[in-house]
Image: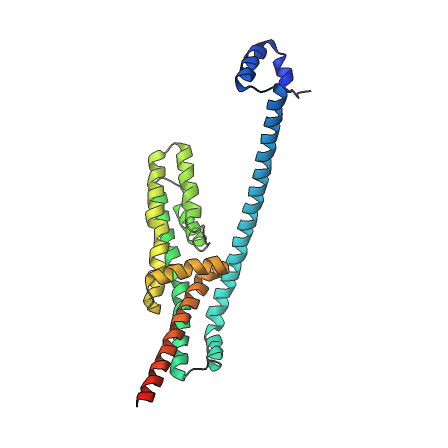
Amino acid sequence: QGHYTIDDLMKHPKTKEFGQKIFATLKISPKELEKKIIDGISTIGTTLITNITKSIGNILGLVVDFVIMTFAIFFILKDGPSFINTIQEYMPFTEDEKNRLGMQIRDIIVSTVYGGLIVAIAQGIITGITIAALGFKSPVLWGTATAVVSFVPLVGAAGVWVPAAIYLFFKGSIIKGIILVIVGIFAISMIDNILKPIFIGSRTKLPVVIIFFSVLGGLSVFGLIGLVAGPLVVALFFSIIQIFKDIYSQSSEGKKA
């Protein structure tokens, strides 16, 4: 009871004539149409289940990455100096060269951690002000959520302002939605791409472009911890190259003398 096929609908006097015209136009039988509908629903269901499963896996991965990064930052700030001193003991360089590498490591860690915090706070403030201006309730909560989500790679602050903009569009507040999208793209999310490389580059003396791509590469290879690991690897690479360049220059000058 309650289950009808297309053949059953075709027997009804009100739908028979209309159905015959449709099937004649489409050049398909009721059985074939019914099969296509069932296959289509099955495909949609399979696709939805697959995408939902992937999304859950991605979310869990982001949560794990965030937890790992939090612990890593805690232990870096807690035991970082002693760890760096231990590494320096085994480096085949002079004391000045060891100190140079040690300072480079410290600068990268400090600038990345504190730079990330500064960017997160700035994004949270801009989001809170924008949300309040557009009439949303609890702007402090929105701003705090933005600051937290800003540490999540690939998603970032867009994980907050994009759903808010979609809500405005569905609500019919098109102008407000457009304003939020513009502010989101060119202010909230753009801050991360501009301030963070500048902040790290100012301490490491590396070009902003190199820092920018080192952050992207670090995220791609190491996940969330790549925010620190990417610039750190690149900065150490350039420092070691410079040390070997200095050693080679001193060796060449010694031979000439």
